[in-house]
Image 1 (cartoon, rainbow, N blue to C red):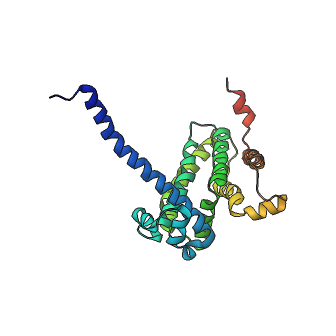
Image 2 (tube, helix red, strand yellow):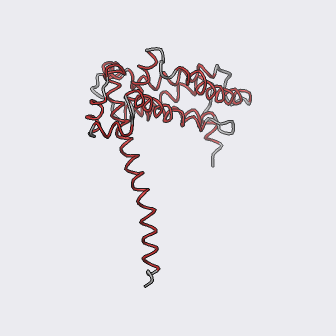
Image 3 (spheres, rainbow, N blue to C red):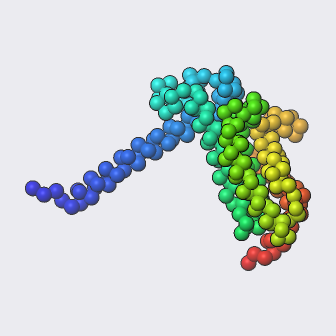
Length: 231
């Protein structure tokens, strides 16, 4: 008796789908745990947070939490790593062949979107910095410094081509980071001064576009000239 070719194909497809389904479930579970970790670490800090609280926030049994992260430190490090990955991936558009109006504008908009979608991640990072970066110090001195040095050279290249004023590129990044992350880290202050209980999407978009204009104008970047050259 020979197995029909159609059945063989179906069985092969099922064999390949099963691992993908398991991987999808794993990634979804890890994403839920990381978001719960952001929430609990932002509220309680590393010292005050517990795995039990994070498991409850993620709506998973504590045993499942330990299946993915063996202890609180490994989970905390994963939250920080995920935050940096989200933030720093957005620097990919800062390239020498791009125009600074588009590259910096898109970077600022992306950082503001992440402020809105991952405010607790920003607060966890800020708390880590306030405590002297005990878990990120080496990364900041090596990998982050290397990346910022690389992007600073791009900005210096733009200035040399006359696309923008000569600025201290590293301090420009500090300014962008501070201006974007303040909407998460100091949200109560922002809302209090604006007389709001929470920033609406429209208000955040307004703040974003104002920040883009301020940075571009402060760097002597004329966005209209760039846009005029587009078809």
